[in-house]
Image 1: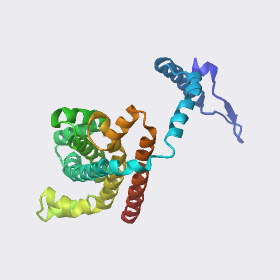
Image 2: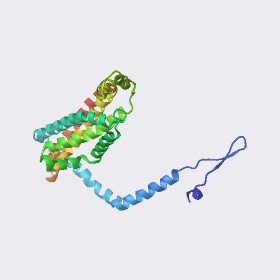
Image 3: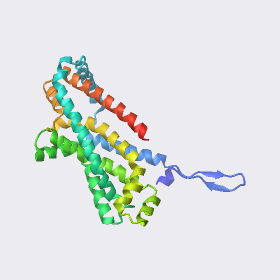
Image 4: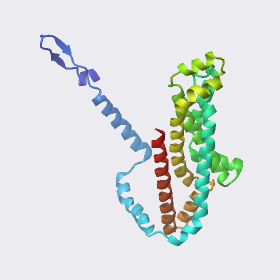
Length: 271
């Protein structure tokens, strides 16, 4: 059917030979995308008219956030610091734990395919599980509060940094590693002196980048009882106190901007 609708074109060369020009797949791709889009609209109940009729309410709420309630800042300071502490500690612990996980998942260092497969699957499952779901599960285990958010951030950082790190390890030059093994070092020692220096800068850069994201993730973990500034956002939205929400959002934006600027500076130095 596709060949009949979009037949290949003939092209005559200078020497008189006739060749068939390669058919474009663009029409087929566009048809598939159109079908998938139509199915998505049907399944999600997307209504463009409803979107345009209700979007004004979004801007109305934003307008009520301005100006923010500056007097509310002292009350949110403790929660903001708890969010930063949760993000920093979770990122550090997760990045440290990612190192042995990445080592055990690297097929060029670990010869046992069963071990590498197990650790790759573990990190893949952790990445698949949303951070909010992880935090919700953690609240049932550790109770309400920052501890649950801390565990969720640790697991996310472990899976994210570990995945990128073992991919970097699998693409390094193995010559120095083999030389270290040939002089009697075990695999861990050879990894420490031959491979780890090759991936150290990217490992630190990835960890810093993950920390940036964790600050934003930690801000919403309060919605499931994991502590931090997210709990204040939930409370004030529930009471329709939008000026307080504006102050929280403003403080969070400034904090994230400062952290991203500092992190970007150090990541540029590392690369």
